[in-house]
Length: 177
Image 1 (cartoon, rainbow, N blue to C red):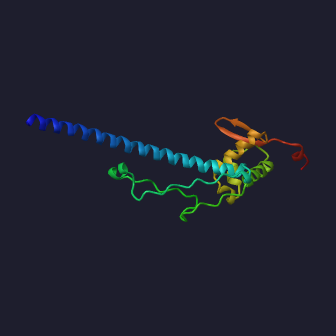
Image 2 (cartoon, rainbow, N blue to C red):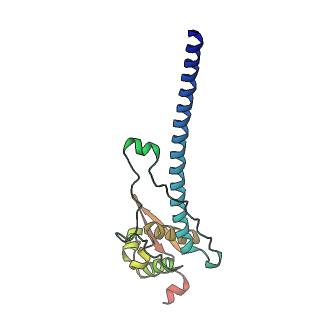
Image 3 (cartoon, rainbow, N blue to C red):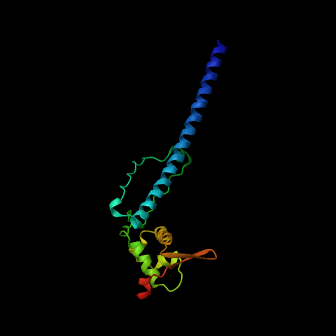
């Protein structure tokens, strides 16, 4: 009977080991998937901001609802003693985001600044000169707006070493003004 008991213990140990390994693998996969989901949500926010500034209001897509938050940290984070960093907010201390600029206002503000500038300017120069309402959209939105204007041929990009500078393409209406 001792052989049967040893065989049962050995078989039990094998299954216990397999189940534990599978649990660890699944938990690691959950953590990777949640990280990917957070990255996709950040991409969604960025693309939504760009859409707000460049898109047609009639074609706006509905916002995707966020799933309910867990009450406790992930199993591996709880085991290691680490927790998630707090969510970032563009309105420091209030817990709310700064209101997004109205559609087209980033584009209009960028074009106004480029018309007034007499020499090529960087995105940092443009961003610093914009009103606070437009700055609330973020520097990435301003850069993407400028790049969209480059793609449309309204603005010209010039590289000076490692920096990139932008100039408004003169048009017949700009020459008259």
